[in-house]
Image (tube, rainbow, N blue to C red; front, side):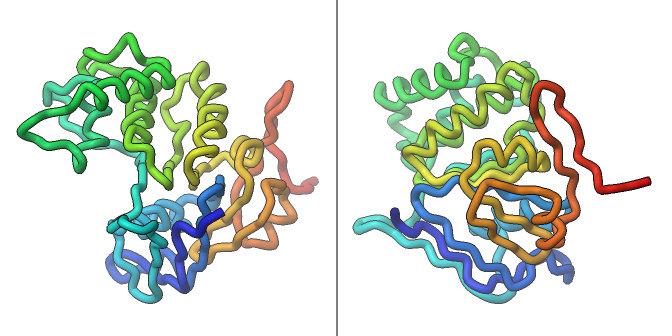
Length: 249
């Protein structure tokens, strides 16, 4: 186990509003952390701080690099992906864009890189869509393609912001199994609004509501959520999925 990222006493926000307040978190090489919390609680901001897209107002973030590295390789699946639907780009080109920083624009992509595309889109179940225009994909197909893009560079750390958003039911049942497999090769931090589902797959939980409370287990219940001031619904998945409510008359 190796420390990849250390978030040390970070405060961050936008336009004078604080989204994260004195947050601490260590991400190790074998971690699979589920991040839960209310809308507007700072979950996406946390990912953007790790990515370097949001500069902390206070505190610092430490990336523990291996010898010869000048940056940590991080894969990212955003909650919303903005793209010009009129721009003519194929699924293959979208996935290859995950290697853009490595590719020589003049020479193009190598056979090995094209083979890597084949590998990841097959894993995502979209091998038959390789040449299809990205703009014509369904919501579930789009998420599959973007996840392939996020992992094609074999990152050490994979950040996922609501990965099951827009995912079709067939892929949703496969998604976290794929992530469990990927976790053998990379650390994963996954934001989700569905505490019940994510707790079935992750190893540990971080409750984020401006503050961050780290729970070193995937077991979570309403008592834990209350203690961590994490006001979200807890949904239980089973033969009959149902929402767990507080005691009421």
